[in-house]
Amino acid sequence: MVSRYLLFLVSVLLIKNGFSQTPDIIVTNGKIFTSNEKQLYAEAVAIKGNRVIAIGKKSEIEKLAKPSTKVINVEGRTVIPGFNDAHYHHNPIHKGYTISFPEDGREPLWPELKDSILAATKTVPKGSFIYASMGVAVGTDSSINRDVLDDIAPDHPLLINSTWGHVSYFNSAAVKALHLSETQPDGKGGKFGRYANSQRLNGRAYENACNYLRNKLPVTDQLFTQSLKELGQQAMYFGVTTIQNMCTGASPETFIRILKTAPIPIRFRLIRWGEVNQNETLYIPAKNVFATGKPLVEISGTKWMLDGTPIERNAEWSVAYKDAAPWKGKMNFTKPEIRSMLKELSSRRDQPIFHVVGDATAKTLLDELNASNVFQNRRVRLEHGDGLLPELFEKAKNARVIVVQNPAHFTIADVWYQRFEGKVVDEAQPFRSLLKAGIPVAIGSDGPLNPFLNMMFACMHPFHPAEALTREEAVFAYTRGSAYAEMKDDKGMLVPGQLADLVVLSDDVFSIPLQQLPSTHSLLTMVDGKIIYNTLKK
Image (cartoon, rainbow, N blue to C red; front, side, top):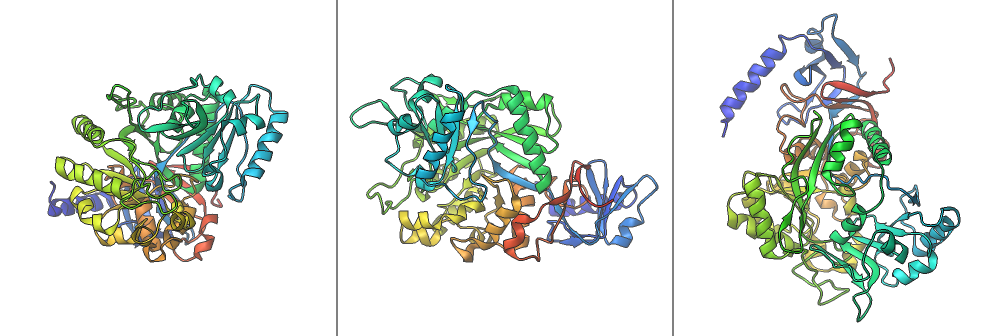
């Protein structure tokens, strides 16, 4: 391990070297938040190539400028490292008609969604797919099944996906279009609903069975390219310079193939989605692919979805769901299968990434990690970690895990109170207490890409306000924390030697009212030392 003294010497040399070079770009006269606690703010930053070479006072940095240097005066605006969305799911646009979710974010109830589907069937050509999204109320309505959906849309394949990704509904036309058998086997890590006393599909899918359906949907290269272009535009507008994408809806190989001909201007990490074959062997998409041929695109890490969520009651807890007792939930995989995952990850030297929600699931994984004693330096990630209760903190520290949290999830307190009581509602979804315990945290959206929306929820924590982060801590988690979770130590801060990914913001996110955060956006976005988006006045 490199000593702190050596790191100090390296940093000093970088700073000295930086002040002796001619910058390509200087961003000056700003409130520059560096995400480096040793020098939290600066007035200017100098960039050469794709690296930061100097930061400091406006007068100091501007002296470095030569005629060839582009000097950008941000007129006192706030500048931060580029946001790094550590947990995102990009699904390509699929062939068919999509029913738009209400623009105000309100979850439509079943009568409203039903009417929207009925209206679509009158205009969409027969045989074409109709897609819709459902919120908690519809996604937990046990009265909705395949027969109900057949009555609404007998001539259109219909797929309704939950906004949280762990439940899908489908009709008989979709069974035919997706080439499912009437007694389609569940597959490992997921399950299909069945009619009572029958193996016939009832039009409901859970966990990895949802991914199975999405991966069979029709898509064209043109639609895939369009979806990635739209994602890139959205990212530039919000100042998201890195997306860590959990591959769903298409294989990593397909993502790479499309990105080679239709690159997006930001950094894009593809994270594999692990599965288990029926013969108990592990299936890792693009297992031996480590390079993509594109400088801003890489493939690394394998994610395993160990359990579900409290919404559909599939996360495994040490206590029963009070509205479904004695049910405690159940992991998607067995302990021997988890051991196989760890063994495979260890042999391939890949980063272990686990969807973990229930406290029982968290304990099982942490016990296996600590017993193996080979992952302490591998930056094992717990995605969500809602059930990482205080009694598990020591195990988590011993395993040196990172928690990647999604602040938008803090808004469903009513679901937690419906499902649980006692320690779960008192201690679930920790955030600030993780930092206090010395457990690293990062932020991913797992939904709307808007980082300022997630920052607002991180700084409010509607479920447990005492667990809210400060604004500085939230930006740390969304930049430096996410880079650490990505196993990238040369990004996430604006200090000499780091990659030049930065954002000039429309508002000062450290001082405006929290409720105004979601309307913030980027005025200038820089990736790898290149300005990819700029609406600053010339």
